[in-house]
Length: 368
Image 1 (cartoon, rainbow, N blue to C red):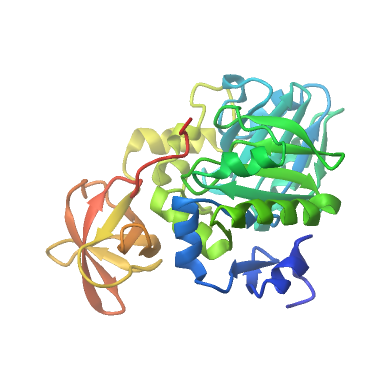
Image 2: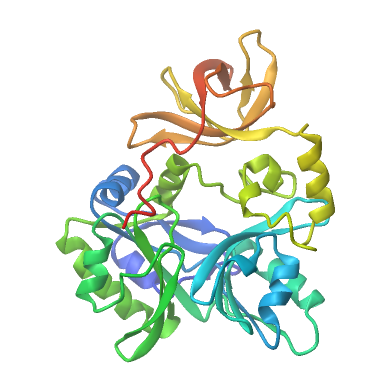
């Protein structure tokens, strides 16, 4: 571990469990745990319940008179569509339309917005907002002040209920709660496609919260889950990962994230470039691939049509533990339609695949 790497407040708990640790966005985080690894952890989340430490995710607050209106002028989605107590997926774009980061905005009030960006991009997002903030609005980097624990899976409600935490709020909403006398935020959000919650807790109480969650999760046949399973779960849902499926070179229009853009808003960073790209309809767009042969597509593999012409590139690829076959997200020419047969060049070997529309599995995230 290099000196520049940060660690979660739960680092020792992961070490004690024998987790395989690796760098993720500048943080030393658990990739998988002994006792089955990624596939077992993935399956536990799909069928029962799993608990993740995702404390590497950024945390930042924007406060002061008109804070929400200010954020709304900067990020792509329209905060005016939601009310306090709701969360919204949104994007921070460059003036050329590229994605600096994708993040969740939690609207506490007109004067208070809490943001959860990706780990590696937090400082950049915070600085961009600070540079534009009007007088009276403060942007505070709280990256290490809080831990984020994700409880995901069909039994997640049972786990939280056993700890006296709220579970009856709607998808993409949040409630304040109490754990051992400490205020925490219970968010009905997640990155797995299953019903679940993300708990934002002060770092000091995180070890006790993790231990309590672990007790309830394991009682129900669940497992602690690392970032390896988080990646296979999100890929099965077709959720983009910044740096792979979203980047300064891959815009929301290309990534199929145009739904997270408030096109009617007067302004947001990158609007002019994105509107032009949306109208032109010339860029490649993100679609799904299901492998019909033996093999696993990986990022940067070329995608070719039946004549051998390169028509795109894989951005994320993995083995789907649910489907038991290779799946991928790929940027493809607009001429490549759903149902088309293509081949993926995996180290010189052509792997047949079908173009599909994600998700690759049945959606459970909004289940009531």
